[in-house]
Image (cartoon, rainbow, N blue to C red; front, side, top):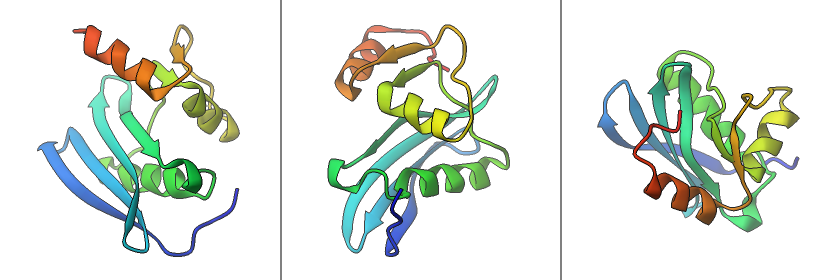
Length: 122
């Protein structure tokens, strides 16, 4: 993994303080990532995280997860609805994806599932 030296992670939204937070990642002035985290029963988890294609595998998602962990005061846990990229992210860190997790090939597939479900995907 390459590291981007000029990456900046900013908190950009509270929807339910202490329970839900949004972060954006920037390289220089360009926004390259967005992530939303929610506090669930098993701990805080990403409801969505997207890093622009040309900026992946450079530490941006790792930095965002680190900021979210600081915000919640505890480790972020994998969601039970993940993209294949998310599975690779967690496995690279030695974290096992929850048994029975839904793994979707693309972010669009994940968003379609989320839109069609009334259940919390934590």
